[in-house]
Image: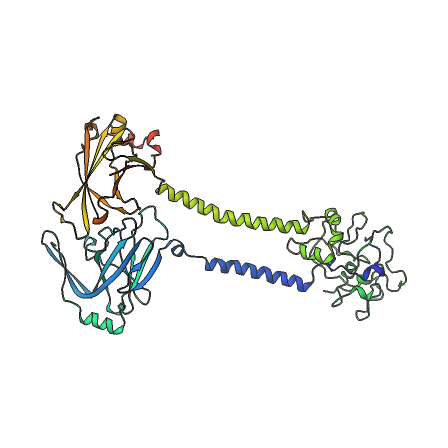
Length: 220
Length: 333
């Protein structure tokens, strides 16, 4: 039972659109806007940074021969060699031989720290297709660049040894990260990524020039 | 959508004829649904009981909208009859109520929080406030103030969203990297921390046994750190310290402890007897005379007695929360 009086002609000349319920068009628009917002929320979740992107290392890049200056250390690659096997002499003159079905890639690396002593974690060979090869465990870490402290004031030289299939060589880059805590990890540590300059010709030269036996260790 | 005409509705509405009780001026856009047209005209305070809305047109009584069961919004008033479908009132307004309240001239009511502000602006803010407060879920404050409130909310929320994780990360960082309190010791002097007296002697060595001469441009440092426990409290703090070589410009070098003559058993540790750590380090030649030794005593409290397994799991209030290693002795040269 309505008690509303009929509208007076005089007042109808200034209609108040605001008092009307939302039109269908508007309601449909609201629904579409709601769906769009929900879809946008899902899409934003999809582009959110992954754990690795948020806490992973910050990478400085360069080419072979360059001195790449990262936040806490500088690094450079002075040479790349290939080898079909590696002969390791330990301090007691015991000789071991490491062999591979692929190729050992020996990267000569130098590094210096800026303020505080640093230590490298296991280096990674990053193939052009994105595959990552960790440094081989056939060579003891004490013989590689991961062993000495990288200290300010001078360059520490060492090698990183990888065992990779020959096909992964072209376009490969070496990644040198720092060690991180075992339990408490620091986020966004610096790392250096250096292009080894292995185009097709250089790769062929590396494979052709691979030594049969590469000696490592022994008394210096 | 359209219901069948009710039996008493003798002359069904001619849907293609213009409306009789609505001035055409009130319509804008497509012909509104029957239930809507009245809302276009503001309702007036009603004093009359329900009379046929348009007496001049008895042939088509006010039941004209009755002819249909109008599609209406799903918004249902709590006091409205929903079933069986009630004949729509002759001049139905959206804001019509069955309550015997006088009708308040139709004011735009905010239906949703997000659509409210534009409406108010369209309707003209002059008429808004008292009607808003008079009915229903009105906005808490005038639109302009709410904009400021929202802006302030955005600012506060953004500050919190950035600040709280940052503060949390900083606290976490500080748990592993405490702020060091530096106690400076004059050359040849003794620094005392936690009931242990520390002394440091630095020598430059050309060659070290087993390591040979330093590489060109570098200088071996032989550092002897001596600790003397002043009492038993000093004895229980006999965990190995951290020893660093630091230049005043902030560059730090690693040292290595190559020997120490502390007794293996803490029981044999004597109060007042100096024990020494033999430490080596290597620094660039040009700063070998300037670097200073930093000793960070380990604040861990070792147990004097050999502990049984049960005792290991018992809670020791002193060992509950070890102090952070934030006290540093800086030995000047």
